[in-house]
Image (tube, rainbow, N blue to C red; front, side, top):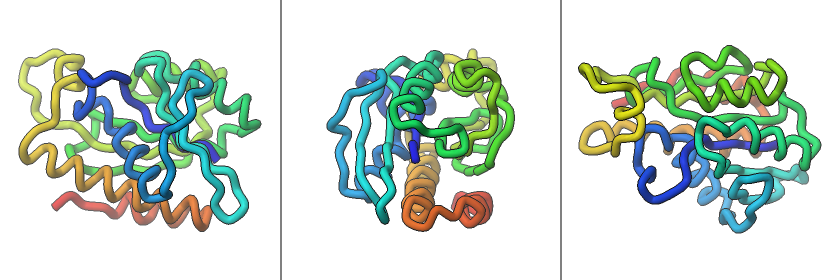
Length: 191
């Protein structure tokens, strides 16, 4: 199983809306007691075994728009199929602090997801968790919003959502029940 959090490397991108996937990956690795001590396939990885199954948590270092290149390489190295990966990413199209989990689907408006689908030859049959970052951004260009720092009440909402997602993934890693994860995640409501 490969769990991939999407984001952008570098301190200037830490705590931005576009790094929600990295945040979930970091929290999951901490819960599993592993560190991102490997660099492989153009990603930082934390590798462990749970119930006899290898678990790879990855944070691609290709920058968001080329995430698929790293995902494709990781899948090749670990001989994993599309239904054996989970991608976690920010989604401006759903409400701030909400979560959505699906077994497959389109890339939507997310460039990192579009690149993953392209690199997988159009395959959209991989699991994903979306962390909602949508809010009234006024007239600001989208790239300015997704690369801005998360602050105040917005940070409280996104921190709670990424923690909840990491907790749900932790249970999924242990029991392998994606349907249960979807029920749990899709019932989540920000407080």
